[in-house]
Image (cartoon, rainbow, N blue to C red; front, side, top):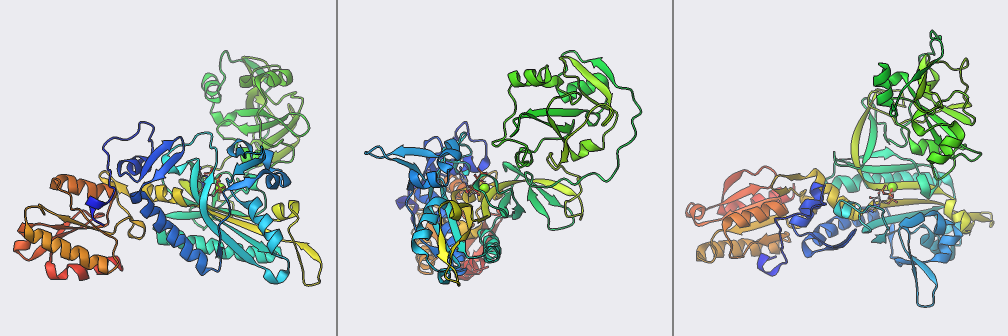
Length: 568
Ligand code: ATP
Ligand code: MG
């Protein structure tokens, strides 16, 4: 590519809302152009990267025998009504009407469409197992689109769906795709970790997320210092403490805590550690309100709470009015003594004694509270988020917390969709049997942003070679004035192009400083500067974008030098 014939629009300014470096750099390099909230145009520069990522994904999916197809982005409401997701999926679903007033949605995912396809096309066990995939735009009406394409409304996803006769067979394919995902993210050059995940809204049993590790990641992941255990924080089990509860030593007393509402305020006021406090959260239950009780310094894990059969779904906290009605006080003073509802306590709370709780009376707390003597609970559950230093749930080592960007997610769906949509095949005995199903997503456009989060410096992007828009940049100094520079640069350009290298030559009439700044910003991994001074010695200058060190190379050796680097 010749820069003069390309659309290279680098920018100095970045949008005020661009909090993440990847968002800023994608705008500054001109990879993206914003159309509206969560809507981006991929420019020719950006698209090159997106296509490189797609290519790796496609090659690896094909290699494992997955079959590519394309389904419509617009989906009829009837399919979503069959699975009840027309209502359940919530406001992320963009609903639209056609000219006849019929309901459709823009697909946020394709379980319904593929299951409809499968029930029409797959009739016999002999056609199973089979895995289909597509690489296609999805639309989710995100409540807070942000970070550019990291959380967009329209984005590119690779979604795959597998169909099976048995759960064992599903598990086998699941394991193969797990490995395929590792291969894909390795080839892309991401530092990543597969982690156990909650299967959440989409339903089913086993699930893993693939996280690109980055401090800016929206998700917290918990991993063991000594084993391969890694899980999304939402999923990471916190083991019951091994210590037993100490005997009560204090009398129950009621104390004034004027205007002290938060755990920290109450702890400071009473000069005790937040670890001696318990907090009581009131939520909607399936059978009246439920109190969830945690140690003062612990955080509630809403997913774990939501998974309890006693807690209503979706997870909803009681509003102020309902709290007053039940507890007789505001949220800051709720306590477990004489609370008239089901009380579920976290594992850490079970072993507490002589603790502090709200008194169910505004501006008052109880101290010296002890289980059995002063209050009773209905059950103990794992309710809190894991934190650094907890024991790893597999019993090996302790937990550390890292931040991650979810770039992929795989699920064993089981028969969640095939059952509600009646997707059956004839089994070996000639009987109709519901298929089991898996689904496997990669956020293709998010991968590009994640790669930038992991590969940049103060000058711009430092692309991993495999996904760089260009791998070699030729930067001729004063080409307009020096015939010799022009000749050498053009010869090198033609030779690299012939060899199939993604090369860009900066043939614009611009100052060298601007040329270098652009090459550094767009992050071309290998840069060759051609100038008269080095040519006098029969040499050119080579710079790797990563190391940023200039080295002189003999003219005759450039091609073999570059080829060596590109094939490494
Ligand atoms: P998140 O938790 O980030 O909202 P999700 O769990 O809802 O994502 P999935 O349904 O698992 O997303 O979709 C598969 C993949 O699509 C995700 O792993 C992610 O990489 C990508 N993805 C999901 N939502 C978006 C979005 N709004 N913008 C860009 N990529 C997205
Ligand atoms: Mg997900």
